[in-house]
Length: 312
Image (tube, rainbow, N blue to C red; front, side, top):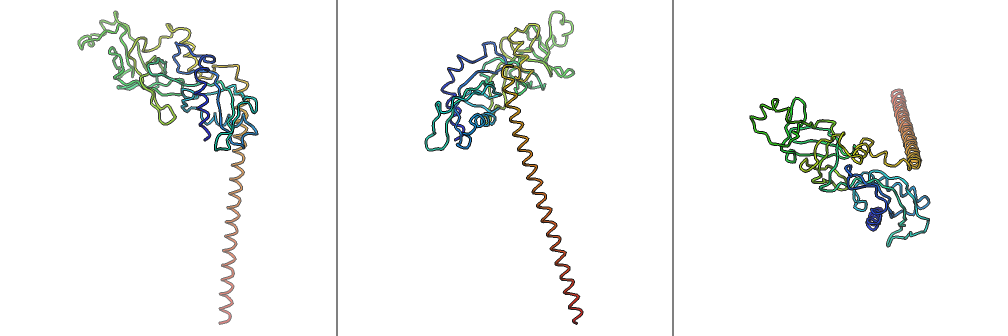
C-alpha cells in the first residue's frame, strides 16, 4: 500500500517534468538524468505530524532501486518540498493512508538500449571486459561484441586495438613490429575509460544488476581525453565524483537532511545499546538468582542429611 501512489503520480507527470526540469542532452554519456519531479506519497496517519520526514523515509527506502515512475534507478535526491498542507491531499479508498504531494530534484540512472555510455574498466578477461558506470553500476562487454581488430596481450593484461581497423592475417600478426610505423595502437586495460553501446539492461526485481555492452559501432572504444568534447569531459568528471557534484545549490539542504538522518541513526543506536545493556543486566541477575537458589538448595539438602544422620 505504501508504494503505489509514489510511482503512479510520477507516471502522470513524466512528460511534463522531462520538458521543464531535465539536465540531460543528446550527448549524455553517463546514463544519469537529473530533473525536478512531482511525487505523490501515501502516508500512514501516524506520519502526518511530520509529512516531510515521512516522505523522506520512503524516498530513502527507494534509493538505488528501479522505479517505472522515474524511468530508472533513483540514485539521489535533493530539494524536497512539500505542497501546502491539505493542497491535493486525499484519503485513499478502503485505507487510512493519506496521499500527500511534493516535488523533489531527483538524479536517476536511466540507461537506454542502444545508448552510448562511458565506463571505467575494472576487470580485463580473455573473453570479456568489465566496467563500472558512475562508480555504482556494473557493465560487461562480452568478446562477441568486440571489434574485429582487437587482440589480447597477456603480458600487459590488456586488449589492443589497431587504429586503421584492418583485419590482419596470421603472417601479418607475426611481423607486426615491422608494420608498427603505419599502424597505431590503443589499449584497453584496468583504469581506462571506454565508450560502449548498451545492448541489454539486466534487472533483478527492482535492482539493475548488469549492463551488457558492445564495442561495435561508430565512436565506441577507449576514450582519448585529448579528443573528447566539453560535454563528454564534464560527464566524465561527474562519474569520478560519483554523481555528487551535480548541484552545489542544494548542498546546504542536503547537509541538513543528512545531519537529521545521522541524529536519528545515533538515537536508534543509543537505544539499541541501552536495551542490550538492560538485557545483559537482567540475564546476569537471573544467573545470580539461579546460582543462589542452587546454593540454598544444596545447603538445605546438606542440613537435612546431617540431621538425618544424627537421628540415626
